[in-house]
Length: 153
Image: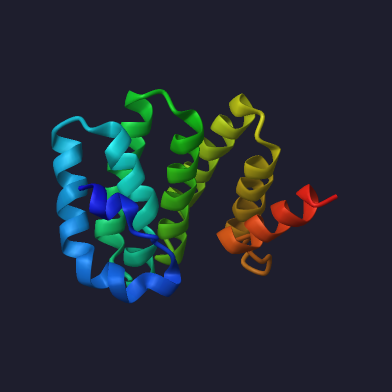
């Protein structure tokens, strides 16, 4: 299992992850069934980009829901917020706007409790973009670039 955690899981490694994906998914499911919350979180956070890239939204939601439960089990609100936000993205891509807004509202609630202004702004921006299709959604890479620029000053 540590092999899956130790992979450098980035989009440039999608081919490697693709060949190991079935094993990683099985490891995530095993962790979920056996209460291995910390390992499950590591696996899901490193793996969830792959099913998003290849359009396996059912499996992605399964991973993210398991991640949500694991984050709640260890009381990690920031991790719960990230998974909630990612779930919102999957629903938005599939044009299920009601579920998108519901997940974004939950992510906003957590961001407020955690006083995470960046996550709060991202969720609010995506909420507006969902309600008004002409507004651009703030994706992960854009949010990270923005955060890096702000922290450089």
